[in-house]
Length: 311
Image (cartoon, rainbow, N blue to C red; front, side, top):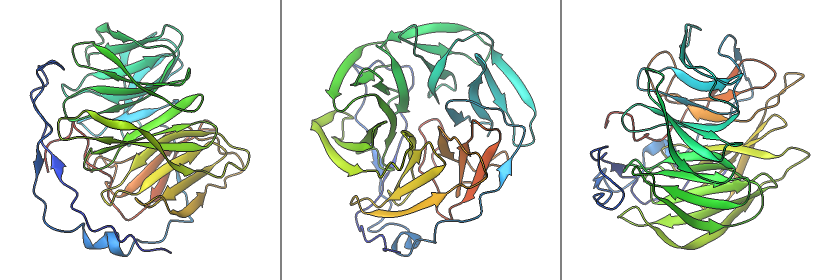
């Protein structure tokens, strides 16, 4: 295995008031975490070969973990939250055909409604409002200011402010899908289903710098790309829907592939656990359309999310 040798700090962003608007948002402040990454980043544990399955968590195109440690996703058009033990709460029925979903700073859920071309904001009491219109929205990533960065199946990369403003940030590739930030929120990664991953630099004010650049080509082997996530070392994990998770180091080096071999694995989404509710911070949870969620013991913690408490 190639060691992760990146030596720059990984600062932890401090969340700002979620009531701000995009026009008045404060810069992204970071906390000093020292001169180096955690020691584990210099000698990464090998990727797991055993991929046990947790049953009873439903099937959804995407999912996120909320502040209570519940898995939140849309199954059969219904937005649900489910615990590690399978206890189910229906948040909002009939939200329609959804792609990505993420948790906003106030704990509400933003859902990409692909056929209506909107981002729907759903409160935990089930109340729904339209946050913004985005053509064919797909993946969603939330930055520490609360803005949503959205990939579109019609090839656009958009930023949606908490005030509902919509900016077209870039157009790369075709059928854009997975999207995620680096752990310091200074790089945004997004992919095309057809195998390309791009990176976009983000400045201290949370604004894009320049234009997206090609980061890596993922060997497809017959499977399209979908969701992505990152760990505290800055490594990038990319879904290949035919049952493979591909890991890249921060410099773009292909570091390994987890082969999820269960007879049938059709995987669209993955996230590191929040460290509460029985979902562990150093485990990667992978949704399977065939049923159940794979539990991968990665041995490296996932990055901090803006709706989590500051560690």
